Image (cartoon, rainbow, N blue to C red; front, side, top):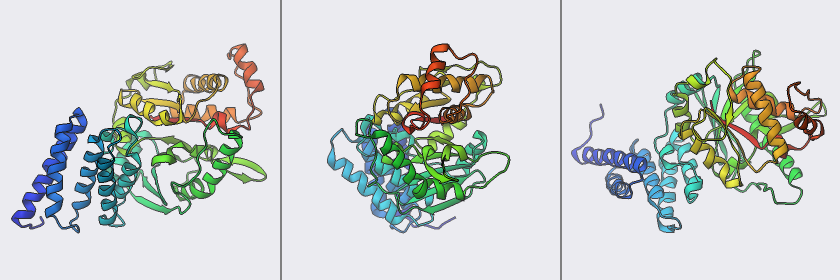
Length: 389
């Protein structure tokens, strides 16, 4: 046990009380508890040496408390939170991947208000061992956190790898549904996404001849609006997308991933059928995005309300495409007995196949749309994402 002097010991005790008050304040939305947490944590940090191994954790906690307690438009509180997260990045060792990634994600979350991931899901980043346990339970190979310039990979064996991705920065040009030549813009973004991010990540994953690798992405800030599964490169003169090479899901935070993975899945067991509902708490639910800023918020709300698996959209998708994707996902869930993540992937691969077969049971009107819809437009199939089980 490390021998510390009395003043340091008292500071650590205040810091721990501050973390507890912060957790309680986040759970209950209690501004007074958050204010008390800020006071206790600030006092502790003032006493502790910045080189102390516990300093980054406490600085991270007070940053979360400042951001969570801030009223909309409270620039001073937001600046204090950003300063705390910058200090975490300066003080944390370069190999402290968990807290460094958390600081990047939290800094990107500041100012998003009710549209962002709940601060309670960002407050206590899980350890690599916790993440590995969740990954094994989900049958997933890796959790990948995308932060500026870096991908932090936590593998199912508990090991961590860091990839340098110099092209991954917040200056990337995102696409919006109202811009001219939207389909071409999404296509160009997905081409960049392979070279800059997804190619290096998939090359770094352990390979198995038995199945495609499976990963969960946690993209920080604006990276969350990139359809990473739609990343493509040319192979033998034809487009090949990341979705063809890997099962790719998404999560708002490592803590949410661990919480969902720890649930009992009686509703998703072998006794079927499984319906894709529209209500928070349904075992599998579809959550359409009314706008770009709703994609992550609503999906997270459903998962925290008890939904096990969410199919959502990164942007508004037309009714015909939505109907086809959901019909085929339901088909693969129930006729092929696939889990939700694989069912959505197969539905997307079906939609992007210009030789797609039409199930005999598909309603005639929907079948006509399936024959007419283009397989070359990424704004259709790439807009859908999976989260949860």
